[in-house]
View 1 (cartoon, rainbow, N blue to C red):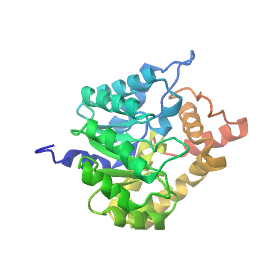
View 2 (cartoon, one colour; view 1 turned 30 degrees about the vertical axis):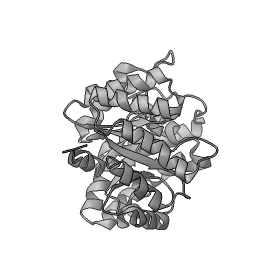
View 3 (cartoon, rainbow, N blue to C red; view 1 turned 90 degrees about the vertical axis):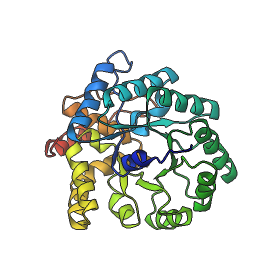
Length: 303
């Protein structure tokens, strides 16, 4: 760890942190060419932080081989134009292997998915992340926090043991809890990323976030970049005008416990002719009326 400052990694988190979709070909496999084209579209638009193997990328529906492929494609396309934040998770050995694979490819950061386990102790949460972070001390590590019960002091404990824990993707839908959690953990110690994307970005920025994740950015990069520019400049009314513009799209994604979160994004991309609409179970397809509504929404957006 000597001499590692993580300045570049921290800067990459204070951005629109894109969560690219994983497009599938007609035979159900990952469509490598389309995936590369979608990544290039993001980079060409000015998006510089990419997260392969995020939830919008259907992380939990990909095989281990596909997760490695998605990481490899993203690092290759990003080159020196972007910073890659690789999603890792599942059991500890799998997460560690994924993190080391990301390091070998030249990725700069890993995002550790909230542990999917019916029994998550607070001390166990620390141990889980510590095992992964300690395995890749050269990489910046970003816990993805979805647990409303986790106190900020546990994050501080983790960072005491692993100084490469430099950022947080906070995805508890409670702005007041975020404000308290971030201050209990150390507001200036970490880069705080609003992990519930554009709908929560204005409220989370008001409490200390400096970046936000986005699935919408796959569809309309200019819209997401406009929002972060407004938030950075302190122009809250301008940010809320973007919020109003995307509100219905994000409501469709959030409906029924976010059942169609990825489906709506892929439907929008299909309406633009950029990729197939197919998602993998347990996600499902949209009914025809919802498809038409999504197409109508995105037709009015700059892309």
